[in-house]
Structure formats: structure tokens, C-alpha cells
Image (cartoon, rainbow, N blue to C red; front, side, top):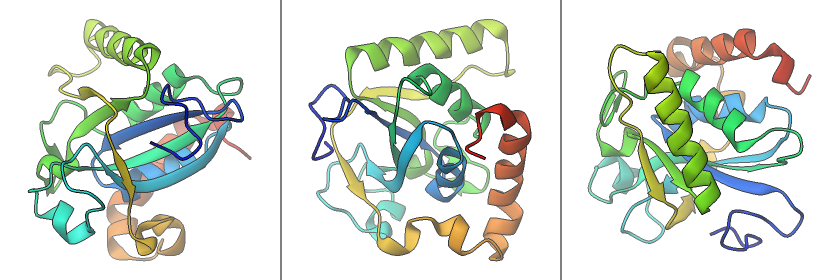
Length: 190
């Protein structure tokens, strides 16, 4: 739990916290960084059974953690539902424990809800997307009560911003960011 969080996903200054996993956190972080109303994005590990795991431990697939981002956002600017709508457009929520070439439970699609309201919204968004037939296969995103979160090592923070020319960023991250920016221009900070 965030140091300023009250256990219901609301911080002392009225912002809310969301914890989302959708494959490699390098792909998620730059997207949420660009959204109006998102005040902070941090890459880390959530949902596992080892305290303060390392990247190497998480990559082994034995800790139970997923690579995740933890967001602090202003719900008067962007709603939790809107965050989830973006989340579901930037990864494939129909592949179990996999995003592209990244395979393992650490790359699973997961929503770690911080309150009963976040759980309700997550389940409703998934039901709406499945009913709309957005994907050929059903959504397999895990909706689980938030239990823990550990920040990733410093070199993972703002990875895309600092390493945009790196091959993985060029081939995998950049196309996702470009697609997001085109689709959500009205929600961008600039």
C-alpha cells in the first residue's frame, strides 16, 4: 500500500491509486505518463509472495509477481473507468500469461483493485468489452484485490523515456505509444 493511501485506494490529497499489469511495464509506463489527470506512474511488481523482489527473481516466474505500474491519478480529471479503457487498448487481455514474446505469469494481464468500487468498475468494463466482442477470444485479465506492490529498480523507471533508441523500445514500445497517442489525443497532457 502506498504510504499515503488509506486502504481504499484514496490518498490524503484526494487522488486515487490504481495498480495494473499488462505485460512489460516498460510498455505501460509511457502511456499512462502521457494522460491528463495521471500525476505519478511507477513501474514495479505486484501480486506475489516475496517481499521486495528483484527483477531477476520476478523474471524467474517463481515469486508470483506481475510486472505492473502503480498510478496516482486525479479522479476529477480522469476516471478509473477511463484508465481501464486505455489499459485494455494497449495490451492483449486475451492471452494468458503472455504479451507478445514475453511469456510467464510475470507478464499476465491483471487489475489489482484497491476498493470494492474499483473491483466493480473493472468487472463491468470487462463484461462490457466481452459483450461488445472487441476481441475474438474472451478477456482473461485477472481481477484481484491489491495485496502488495514493490517499486522496480531505478533503471526500470521511465525506461522508455530514457532509452527510446534501444532496439526493444523501437520495435515493441514505440508502436504501442504511437497507437495510444493517435487514439487518445484529447486525453494527452499536451
